Each structure stands twice: as structure tokens, then as C-alpha cells.
Length: 68
Image (cartoon, rainbow, N blue to C red; front, side, top):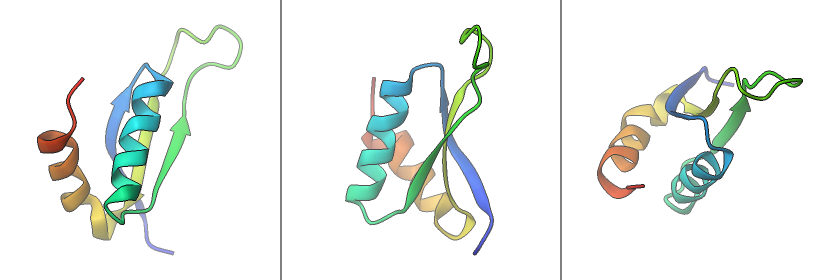
């Protein structure tokens, strides 16, 4: 399997799910990596990761087609 690259980071799990959903609609496999502290849930972030081969395309989609 190829390496993964972060294409989106947020404190909001809902925003991460939206980004993941949009990327998957465009045919890009994406996963969510939760780096929030499991006890306090105030430290850390949630990242959307894609294959390094799809990273540039995914970043363009996130930057140009998704707005919050």
C-alpha cells in the first residue's frame, strides 16, 4: 500500500466526515485519523488522509470545492 498524506485537518469530526465524503464521491479513497486526546477531547485534531498518489488532486478538491 502506498503512503498516506494529510489533506485536511480540523477540530470538528463533522467537517472531517464531510471532506471524506466529498473525496470519496470523486473516487478518492480517504480515511479519518483521530488524533484527539481520548480523555479530555480538547487537545489534538482530526485529519483526513489520502494515498500520496491522490494527494494533489484531493487538496485541489478540498481547496476549491469545499467551503465551511
